[in-house]
Length: 100
Image (cartoon, rainbow, N blue to C red):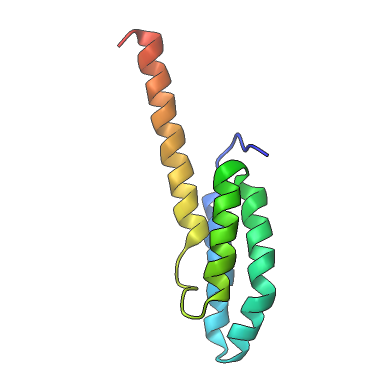
């Protein structure tokens, strides 16, 4: 599953905020992470697709399951990686077309 568009920054920020919400309720938060982790991993894979989606989904699952790692904004970081990579690729293609 290969994505052709960059996932929305707003959606990525929202997903990271939902992951952080477990800190709002002590003890209940870690229990909710067990439920949220696989859901988050599936959403991550569907949003990003391809190798990044697969790797990021597994990383996201682990990050949500391990206590204390919820602060990592996995969706947002990945969105910037995809965006920067797409911009770099587009610039490279322009250089080839222009003969540089």
